[in-house]
Length: 358
Picture 1: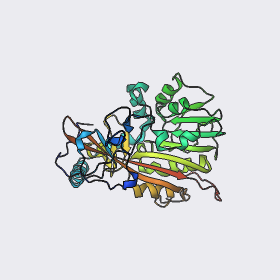
Picture 2: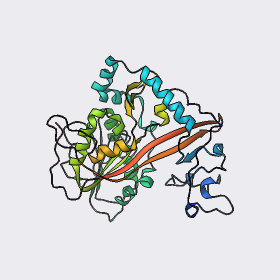
Picture 3: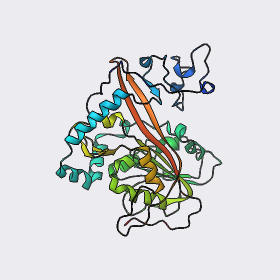
Picture 4: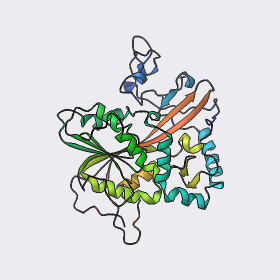
């Protein structure tokens, strides 16, 4: 997607205020663990990884470490971003290509997984840190639990969960609409049908995942999958997730946020519509606003068209913006990442049936 975007190195960094009581304590001296270069104490090198602990303060040298957490984008980056968005809008994807990419998205994901084997992807070890419920359901005495992963890809989320699992009653349904991705999962040495079932499933189709009935799932995992859908598919996907979840079940969600480096550096011929792009490999990606996601999952922002039923309403347990400043110390470059992370719960007492979007 092009070279790293260069941001002026003398641009002021907006520091994040931190309560003194919450600051990390020094380890054997005056250096807090999150700023230590000692691998024995550096919180970034522990397992599970400790995210969100390295906060940039005014006195810090931004180029001392490769990454800083919770750093707001500065004015220079925001201005640069708006210039880039304007250029993207001026050179959108042609109507012909837009139809080509939207009509058969599975085709492009199949090609993606043909070109990238399972070794290409990193296991998502950080998920248990970000979503503690994933550690809870793997405890030996947790009891029966059905977990559905939507957009499971090559299994880089599902298999690490299985590797840490001590719960004999945990079953993972790992679904992806790429048949090649499902094939890769089924050929993995860790694939065991007593613990995991991998199937082809389109989250925006009208059918539920194979082997799952309405109200049968405890936890739904959606990691960088919702952004692969077009805005016209969101409502059906949310409806499907609502239907398959048990009352009180939760969605664990993480995806791209507007202003992320990946969005800003898109060049001409990639813009499909506002915040929605096609990558060079033909796969699509959307960059979300926080308020937008809240409306989608609460049911407030998804309008009913024609005779379509009302959109499902989830309780927004949590929804936040995860910002990270990455730096290239060799080139003295600053790059901003932005992700959305949330937990959405189906009401424990549902009085209305879950309807399929028409």
